[in-house]
Image 1: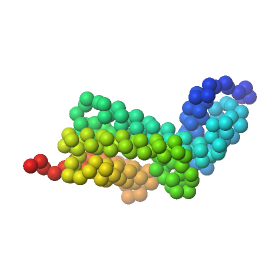
Image 2 (image 1 turned 45 degrees about the vertical axis):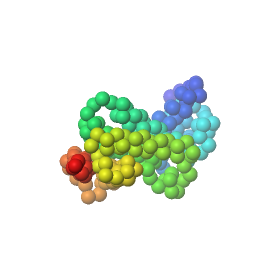
Image 3 (image 1 turned 90 degrees about the vertical axis):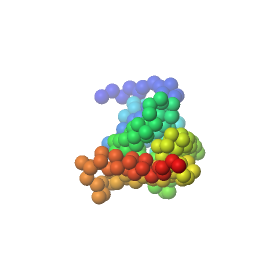
Image 4 (image 1 turned 120 degrees about the horizontal axis):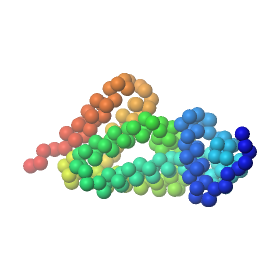
Length: 203
């Protein structure tokens, strides 16, 4: 194994550190992630990560922030899509739950206690999470106008309730409680139907 260190441009190194940290997180969990291990994986000096993240909390916040930005990008793409509205909603529900299932450690950082209750969320993470939820509400408003989601209440309340359904099913899948994985697709479809059928008949 070579000890030669790699050279990165500033932005490239930050992206590489976040990507490598996410990989370690998925493989070994939060306890297995350290600045030293991250530096070794990326191939930089062991002080290099500290030039961009002052401590592990800042690194974890950056991983969660990247997750929110990816989620917001998916929402933005669906908002601008010309595909039929209900189909786009179905697609997003499946994508959301697939992300939670395949990126469990990242999802936990995005929505869990480690950062939001026992840690210190950075300002940029707070901004990214708020922007993602704002984008979600923009789309909910559009789905209400298209008679896909209930329009007898505000986009905020419908957005909160529908997101709670998404998050709840995702958590059941991640935690493995009261859930047979063979039933997940049927449960997703039932959740979608429940949300859509809540739409009152137009007068």
